[in-house]
View: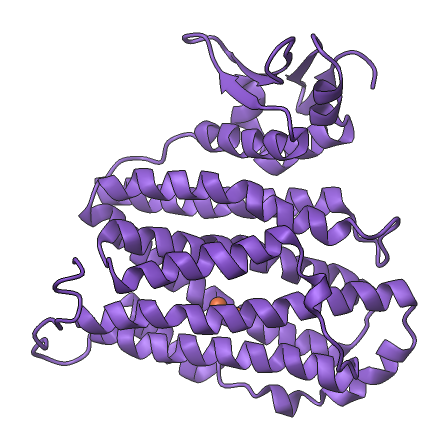
Length: 390
Ligand SMILES: [Fe+2]
Ligand SMILES: [Fe+2]
């Protein structure tokens, strides 16, 4: 659809609603399980736990809650252009589901604001917690991709918007955030009412992501060009996403609650891998073919991670013909190299490969010293990293 015809609406569809369709099933589920009220959680009761926390513990929770509040606000606002195109294209089942989606996002905004008000008693400005990568995603990339739909509602534009919104915003960044909350609060049994709200919000997000995957699969089936767009968009967003996670941890010498940057990065990469696998499965189902190996996906995720860690050194990956080794070149001149065997890429989750490389500070070492070679191979079931001592 182009600018010229974007204001036109498709002719109304005759017949009733398709209750067995994915959006209608999600709609019914939303009425049933999504009907919760942040005001009824009794969040004030959790203020006692809050008052016992250390200064750093409070700072970490305040930072994450403040970021969630801003993110949910963006998610509420930025969904509207997508709703407009669903309306224009006359997809009534999706219209119904999207009313619950929008109301969920509004409720999440309210929930995180209530946590700030009723548990933390915080009334100050949280702007300082928004790092460069966070702002880049929520103030630039996300609204730009969503607003673009108002001028161009082509399958490619819809795919770009949904990859940004559901796959990365909700599916990777959101899940990484929930993971940090859970790690911090669950282990110590802190703030049970807050945790209940997080559990309910996360269940809402599951529906949103299921819907996102449903639409993306349909777009891929409709237009073969869409797949390359999704793939490029995901690649482009990995570094920003890892930036958000890394910058979250940066201000702290030691993280409280047993949190660690490595574990969170590992978790985030695993979520990327999950989202990617789901899409690949949907594509293969559409083609009626078996699912291909996850090697391509492992290479792209490891590459994105090495790039993020090796900044400002450029990183490229190549493979000679059918060579069973992938070479990641770090640096322009006098480059160093990381060699990863095909066996490792085929047999291990990207998150595990990244964890093994992270524990040896591989990207940093290769960036710092020229002409180094580090080899990552499989011995028995284990990933082994060999190279000059760090
Ligand atoms: Fe949300
Ligand atoms: Fe959501």
